[in-house]
Image 1 (cartoon, rainbow, N blue to C red):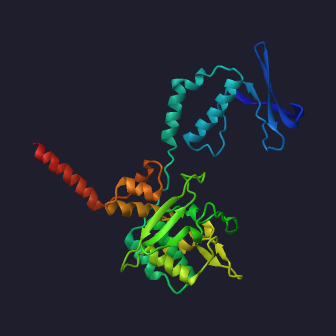
Image 2 (tube, rainbow, N blue to C red):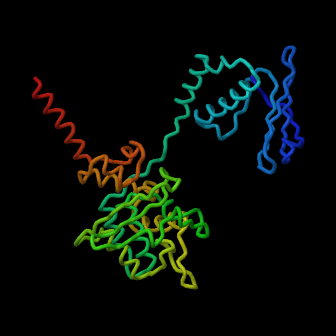
Image 3 (cartoon, rainbow, N blue to C red):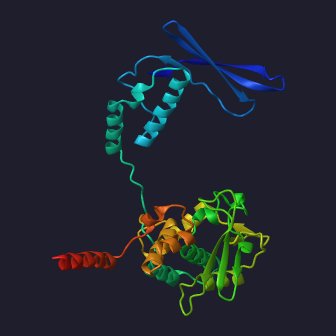
Length: 332
């Protein structure tokens, strides 16, 4: 097996045009062969390649780094070792051995990485939030607009908030100009999403007005716009600074505000997160009879992974078993 040895860095002219960093990787002697590989990288790339190997068996007390807690990390590590083995023309047959496959299978069972999936927000959760919010407060009105738009449009947090307030990107996060108020309701132009990061096309989401209902995204957004006007290029959601300019929320701002709101509602903060709005929107759409294709279109899902977002009610699950039982009964 391959193990770290030593390395050295030198500089040399490459093609007579520009300096490049040459990394000399010196390996131990294998049989009658000495291996020396040089990798040329553009100068100032920031890459530090210093992985040098000697040939020896893996000791029984090998310590794998702490972050190798699941089989995916172990597989990535082995893949890197195999790549160097191929470069050095070593035999890679052992990487396909049954014993290694069984070992990885055992790691899968011992270190199952179960994602912490949050529960979806349902209509009665949203009604409770509306009850505790003060719609005469600008911050509460803005947060309620965020909640309504995110629920109905099934948005991700990254589509209107960045890691910090100063890194707001109008090409990736929603601006006031991206949301139009029409007679029918709202039209939201999504320029960037997790599944469409190259700005090839605009994903348009129309939201219709819900008459005589507090859970109306159009009413929530219109109220916010009236209380907090902004220019088309400014963040769609945020609060004004001392100069009257709209300052975007950061992701941590949103999380903190939502956490406080859940506490005020008496809800378990460990069971819900902002993503509960996206999942709740998909669940609500499914319960309302929307097709899989329609849900995928609104949420801009590129695969069937959205099905994991939908939480079916007990009544619906009873209905499924009831239909199965009726089928069995008629089959006799």
